[in-house]
Amino acid sequence: MSSICEKCKCEININNVKYVSQDEDNYSILCLSCYSGKTPEPPKSTNKIKYFCSRCRYSFSRNPTVKIKCPYCGKEDKVINDDRNVKNIISEVSDPTFDEGNLF
Image 1 (cartoon, helix red, strand yellow):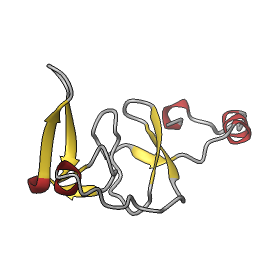
Image 2: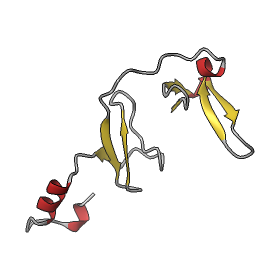
Image 3: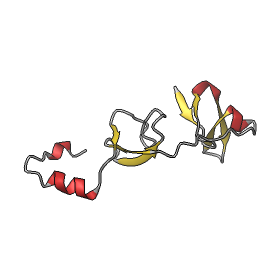
């Protein structure tokens, strides 16, 4: 299992996680480097890909090298590449063979 450091956004092994209290009810997940104050350089990838979770209908973008799971519901089984735009949606729903069950 892995998690994402909230400070440097690096993927970290769950065994190397430190939880830091933000307030009475909330905690931040930090890698050991950020926790000790030696912040590593965040990944320099700017080629993020847009994704859509059809389970909870949440749109988000991620670096393609990170394992993709929805940050909202935590599931990965319904996450798809989000190449939707207005023209694609209009042409798709105006097709006579369109099935509403396969919209997302």
